[in-house]
Amino acid sequence: MFDQDIKFEDVDSYVLEAEHYNDLKDELGYETIWSLDEGIMPLDKPIFTRKPRLVTYRCIESIGDNYDEVQWTEFTSTAVNGTVGELWRAAESVFKQAKATVGDWHIYIEDFQMQDDGSLKLVTGS
Image 1 (spheres, rainbow, N blue to C red):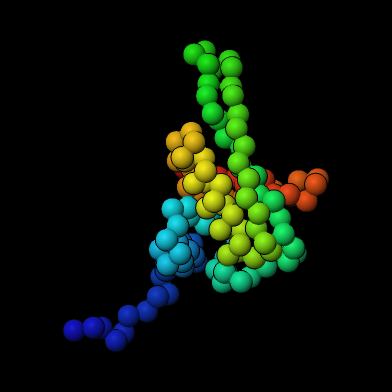
Image 2 (cartoon, one colour):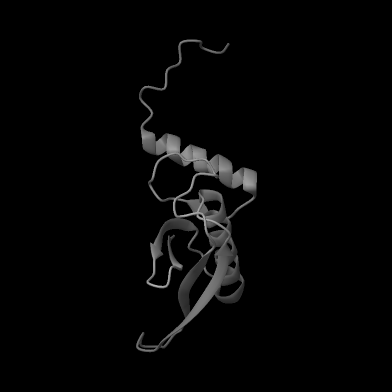
């Protein structure tokens, strides 16, 4: 029988945040995981101003035998506004491009760094 006295006092905010974004990931059918440590936010929460933003993702295409020659490649997508949902959608898009092209596996969305031209550089982790 279900225990009516269960309390969530011992669950820290990190666990609740991770569960929230994991549920959204599954609902959206995404491979990437939102991991910005900004707290629990709905998809329509603006992080940046509500204007279109180019999202770029740069990753290694190939490395020389002695790790001395690195070939980089860049992927892009546009977030139609600065909301969590649109930024995540754009990040998912560039991740899938990178995965299909170079086998990228960095699924954790860790940051969006504002560039001088107003575009956002996606930072990921594995």
